[in-house]
Image (cartoon, rainbow, N blue to C red; front, top):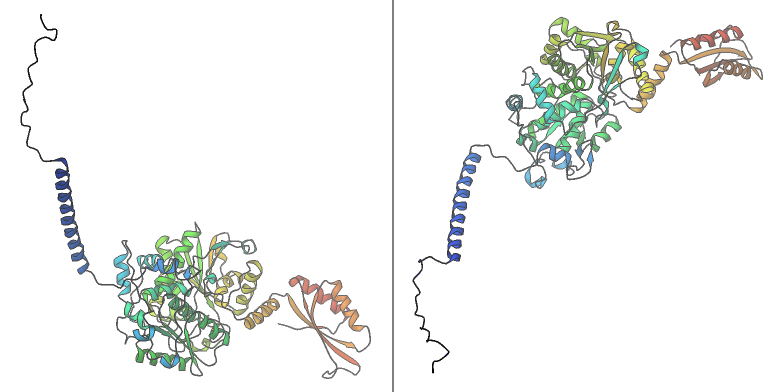
Length: 559
């Protein structure tokens, strides 16, 4: 019997052959990772060594924020593009010790700024004019003429600290037959164009001098600008004012952040005291001079005017006293367009610039240094300086080379231009701010009829009592306010009849007085002095004729 299972199967034999001798997968990954880490470490070490060698070749600077970061970001509310934090209060008893690290508790910081552009070397040349030693008390050693590149560098550096003011078309254009654009520099935080030069000057100081501080001795717009910007830039600042300085000016300067010290009865005494403090304590004594750095900052006005008003024919600047604005802006405008006419305006009472151009060197006019209208203790339109010349050779040389015309105007024209700006532009400016428009008001520039003209309103610091006096005088000069005197019988109803005539002629009565004792007329008469407001010169003449018809002895008080 045959079995159904078939023949028996042969047992399989072990035919396994040895495979390739390779390490496990995890071992390979680990080796590769170690290799990558090693290469990264080598490259990092090599790069770090290169950077260290490069840093060793540079000047070590303190770790501080840049100027734009300082102005435009943290540490307090932003005001006019600047931070609001003020330096700590200064104890007057520790005046000589101010600036030491232990007293300041390290709160005074300094910084440096590098301009990454082709103007870096030009700016460095300008900064080399700043004195490096604390024994140097002014900037008069910087006597080189400015270039357009210097002004461009200044515009870049102060762009975060200075307001770019508008240059707007004026409603006065139709009245005077030309396209007038007003550059409103009185809108700067301290109300003056001098902020531009001061800001560039302070930011260009060496770090060591920034730590020691600066000192000024006047109550001018220049001192106000130094007080404000030095405080904002964390630079210790001292302002020495005479005891006769207006309390409002002293208060304002303290609010800007400066330490104000009242010393001496005159400005000369204050300046001598400030120079002595600067020499003893290492402060930098600043005064308004025509250094290249200061002029470059002021020249940025010309750059902005050229950018804001296309196809300009002429630009009018104030020219009296420190004519740095005229000289610096002329350098910028003439470089951009040599065909733009640059015109300077000064007062007929103090034609210092015209005299200096004729003489070929700066002249001095001490008569204007204490004039309430132009300088001294009232406003900052100073044509003279107690300590010396009105301006330096740099400004005079640039003015003689680049300025096309210098005209002089009367004080009456300045007052009327202040009135026009207040009425038509709602702009409250002082004599320095209004003198440019005064040349147009006086008809001194007939060649500008039908052309496009920019006028720089550079200052608006006018004290209240002086503003009231100036506006009242301007209204009288403009035949808008007049005064009549009459001799009437002292009977009931005579004054009412006079008022009826004034009402019929649409004159507004401002004041009326009656004098019964100190009169030279017959008894039982009264002298009536009446001050009225009229529309214009024609209306004043009509009113005078109506009063003369009723009162033949009436007289008009001449202004």
